[in-house]
Structures are given as structure tokens and as C-alpha cells.
Length: 99
Image 1: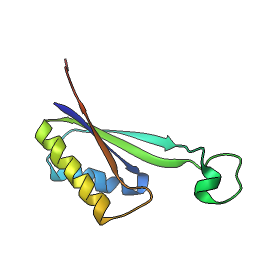
Image 2: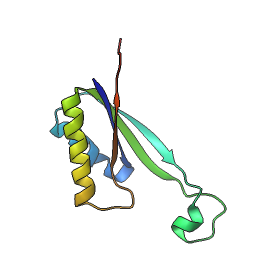
Image 3: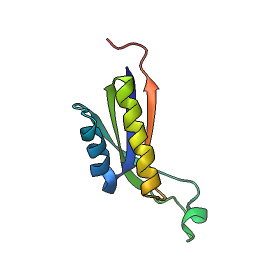
């Protein structure tokens, strides 16, 4: 069993949901995230005393290992097909035990 997690900006959440749907992930959870950076001046090039938050979501599901692999393969393909400063990200964690 694997925990597969996909993260994207709020505007790209339909893409993440489509990936799960395409691979028959029937149940998933979604958490809203506010991201921050200490590199505002360097990254955005204007004067600011604080960072500019980004709004994204993290969707995660418990799935068999083979499903986690095809989901991650699709995320990698999305990154290659749609280069972005804020691409869809994914990660997989082994689930040792679930009760």
C-alpha cells in the first residue's frame, strides 16, 4: 500500500482530480495549503517586506503500488508537456501498516 500525494496551485486542481479519476482512484482527500517563501525579492523582483503567499492544494490517496506508479508517471508526463514555474508535484510514501 502506498500513500500518493499530488500538489498543485488552486487553478490546476482539476488536472490533479483528472489524474486520480483516469486511474480509478475512487477515494481521496484534499487539503488547502498556503505556501510561503523567504526569497520574495529575488524571485519576484520587487520591494516587499514579506513574502507573497501562493495558494495550492494537496490531494492524497491510499492506493496499491502499481496505481501509485502510474499516477506518478502521469505527473512526470504533465511536467514535461506543460513546463511551469509552479508545476504539479507528486510524491509517494510507503504505508507500513494501516489499521
